[in-house]
Amino acid sequence: MPRGVMPRRPARTGRQDRVNMARTRTAAPVRPGRTPAAAKAPRTPKTSASAKGPKAYNPVAPERIAEILKRLDQLYPDVTCALSHAGAWQLLVATILSAQSTDVNVNRVTPELFRKYPTVEAFAALAPGQLEPDVRSTGFFRNKSKSVVGAARKIVADFGGQVPDDMEKLLTLPGVARKTANVVLGTWFKKAEGVVVDTHVHRISRRLELTKNHDPKKIEQDLMRIIPRERWILFSHQIIWHGRRLCDARKPRCVDCALENLCHAADKTWSTVEVRKNAKA
Ligand code: SF4
Image (cartoon, rainbow, N blue to C red):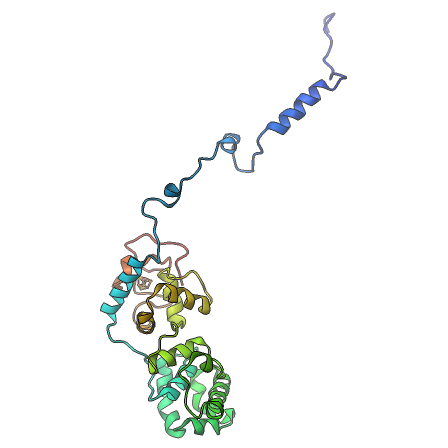
């Protein structure tokens, strides 16, 4: 080492340490995966116009809903419930039996069932086990037998043998939830108290972005908010028919669907429009 040149040592005063500490405090934190420059870049405040965009897409805009309803009217002008029935009691039984089954399957069972037990009193006199062989082919036959016999007994005991035309009273019957009550009220009594949310309405309402919910009660509330009340009964029937004919759960026939250019479902099988990842069954 040449004379007069000494190796540098840290200052005893700690002066340099204080400078380094200050630098550390003022430096912007950098999150993993971000460059320091990006981390420091100031955020541009968004105005409400730039956040929404000039033509923000609103899946429940009244004009979109009106167009969907118009096309459903063209596709299914006079549809109604596909369950065979003659009277409110028969419709109630058929709807209870249709859970997790098809209308075709239920329609195979009910003519013989109503020939054997022609009145609500005849059902009320049964033990649930006696009904089981008659409804076995509709699936879940033990629960369904209990519900049908229980509903018959309650109708005889509390409602004079007549199916009530009132949502609250219908909901007191065993095995009857809002879907069944809405079917009876809408189809037989022509009372629009709600929207029937069965498996088809559930799936297609989500595909068409009429709801983001999965819970049938919440889906019904969403639909009641955006569909005019005078359309509640027909809308349910139309969507149920659309589900049977075209908008299949696994393989919707989008290429043949008149709603195709209004539908952004991610599980479409064919599309002329942009699809949205959250719009699906
Ligand atoms: S386009 Fe396809 S997914 Fe959409 S409603 Fe029609 S059949 Fe269903």
